[in-house]
Length: 154
Image 1: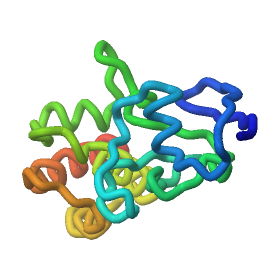
Image 2: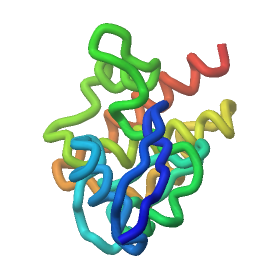
Image 3: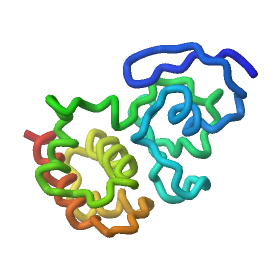
């Protein structure tokens, strides 16, 4: 066990944890967060996605000792009363069904569009190609991301 300082969703905490523990388990257990989910445990599906310093990471394969930047999860984007524009776009396009995978498309989409505000629908679809969604809400997710991209460009 070791004391690690983690910056999560705008706060900073010191936690006593095994440095090799996947960040996902720390976020779920120590922080009680429900956004990142355990999907495959291999970093292949994207359900565990978080942003670290604006870049997407699969938290199920990232040791918490390697999480040295500012971590952002779905919970840190916006609130129920004031959702982030990307959350608003997903709500308006009804772009989720079960919501299990939603950390992947929202956070990968946000990172991609923020870095590529002129992205086309085809480029957005390609950026999401590594996200697995079993209920297949992908077409609505892409519409939501296109909507968010238009807002970022405006």
